[in-house]
Amino acid sequence: MTLPDKAAVLEAHAKNRAVASLLTSLPDAILDAKFDCGELTLTIVKDQIREAATAVQKAGYNFLEDVTCVDWYPSEPRFHVVYHILSHSLKERVRLVAPVDSIDPSIDSITAIWPSANYYEREVWDLFGVRFGGHPGLRRIMMPEEWQGHPLRKDYPVEGYR
Image 1: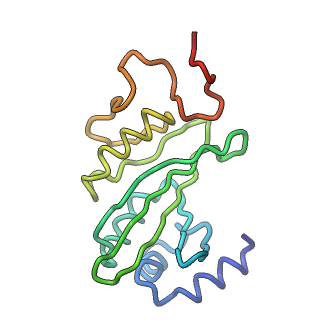
Image 2 (image 1 turned 30 degrees about the vertical axis):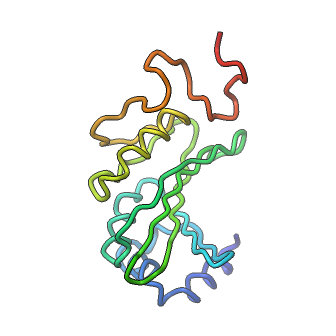
């Protein structure tokens, strides 16, 4: 998305409490904005994801629905960690996307903001290999502890490592 497109989306959704909160407290955190199929997606600088999650929560978005990941191999940044967040009172959703490169596949944990992120972050670590800094117990959740690699990475061998 070009800069005028981002600005147009942000201007059109300036009344959205999540956008307003982020523009007020973290104006440089939003890398991109897109409104498609009735859903607002904000691309956030990975180093500010914890602060962005706090700002969105303070804006009235009270429920973390999901944390997942997309592997865009061989593109860089390779991973996009995706947070789906809901406001029950506003009846609105917002999606935060944080690009994470393959050189250092890590991002801050948001378990201090939403404790329910615990298992989602463990799943992303287990299947994609993205580390969550400050996570209270980052360990495998689906694969056996002795498993080698992260099976949802696009470069993972179909039959596993042998």
